[in-house]
Amino acid sequence: MKLIELIKDQPFLTDEDLSLKFDVSIQTIRLDRLELGIPELRERIKNVAKNNYQKVRSIIGTEIIGELIDLNLGVSGISVLETTKDMAFSKTNIVRGHHIFSQAESLAMAVIDAEVALTGVSNIKYLNPVKAGEKLVAKAEAVRVRGNNHFVHVRIKVNQKQVFRGKFILVVIDGDGGVEE
Image (cartoon, rainbow, N blue to C red; front, side, top):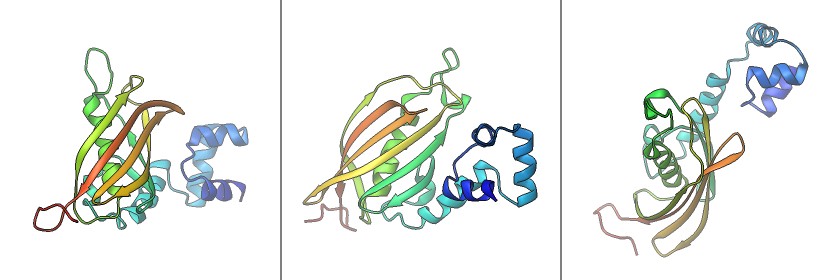
């Protein structure tokens, strides 16, 4: 029962995290999860994300880079991206910047409460390299709206260490391609 309660409260705990918490082997956690019908981490993330994709207005849910795990439209959002070798330079195993930027920009777009928007300005900074296989956790916050401009800040971390920050000004446009007033 403690396992069920813990995963209900914190659905993003890995089997490794759970094994440390309960001081048992990873195999024991996996067997207990299987017996209790608790899906593996990836499935739990997908289930949470599925509910959030339906809230997005500005882009199609499948255009979001990473798994959208939390969305408070017009306020904030969180996405997770599992990096892979094909996202990285083969020589250094460092993830290419455009993958990180894409996660940040798509999360910023998802957060704003608008039908159609484009990135007008972005001010970004890569703070630390990301190695293939690391999990990027992006958090976006809508900080203000001025006219048709939505200001969104995005921070991306790996293991609680910030690797990227971006400040986006997203411009809301009307259905005819013009700027909304």
